[in-house]
Amino acid sequence: MNNHTDLRVLGISGSLRKSSFNSGLLRAAQELAPERMEITIFDIKTLPFYDGDIEAQGDPGPVAALKSAVRDSDGVLFATPEYNWGTSGALKNAIDWASRDQAQGSLMGKPATIIGAGGRAGTARAQMQLLETLGETGSVVMVKPGVMVQAFSPMRFDADGSLIDEDTKDLLRRHLDEFARWITRLARPGEFVQYACEMDIDTSKG
Ligand SMILES: Cc1cc2nc3c(=O)[nH]c(=O)nc-3n(C[C@H](O)[C@H](O)[C@H](O)COP(=O)(O)O)c2cc1C
Image (tube, rainbow, N blue to C red; front, side, top):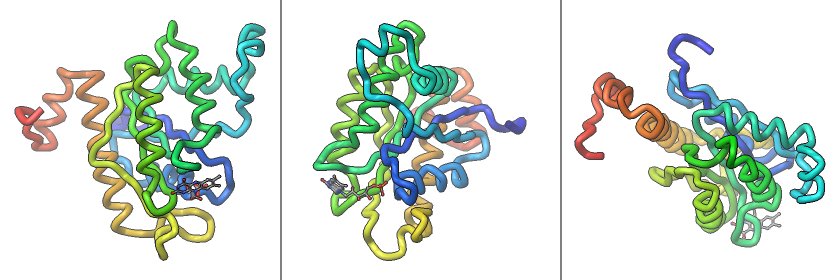
């Protein structure tokens, strides 16, 4: 972490496949994030299905790792695919596990935002469903400007699922800039005023 990096963001992709467009969006986010933001990607592939009996015996390693990664972050960036108008079961499962950490303050009050790459609706329906779920966890979710990518349009991603489209990169960059402001405003209101001055942001507009 360099001197300017003071916002630690956790990125979680809802897709498990290797060449996932959503994982590609997160890798692009790591490159495009403002200088003060560092994005670490957490892989949810090894999480077991949520099971109260497993939980009663103590969190398995991947679950404990997820909870502490969320707890230690200043904000969470979710990248969701759209499966049958909803988010993926894998991502819902990860959120269900993380939400069981309320006493330690894992997702409760946590700044969060959602991006996604999918079919014709660009994951709009999956993002709406995820928004409802995150509302119940107590996360404070930033919706705008929004990143909903039609993944199958030509030249958006390469064969490895890496984002190559410059317009989408610009959109993602704007979304991340706004997320930096969102985190700062929620977690450190005093500091937001200073940051807004540096960035020439008009704080009177809320
Ligand atoms: C089971 C399944 C259901 C899907 N349902 C939808 C859907 O309802 N709407 C949509 O836009 N795309 C749908 N898709 C397409 C995915 O959103 C698309 O494949 C997306 O790229 C997957 O994300 P990934 O590249 O990160 O793996 C579906 C794909 C699968 C495998």
